[in-house]
Length: 99
Image (cartoon, rainbow, N blue to C red):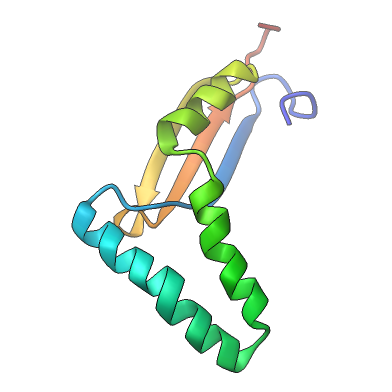
């Protein structure tokens, strides 16, 4: 992604994530692994709702993903949690000069 951004361009990634709070993380995991697949399976293809929890668990944690962005050459890598940490926005900037 760094290659296709203009110098100074900003990468923004919106990703589901696990809440940092143990209380919200417990509620979220119950919702994600039990309620969402059950309700989603009634309304649509249940496989999509089984995939989402696996995808969330497989995604790197916040610090690891920011480290990957930095290793890829992005500067000013940061994250912002939304909705009690259920969603995270990651941002990084392509340097004006090559790293």
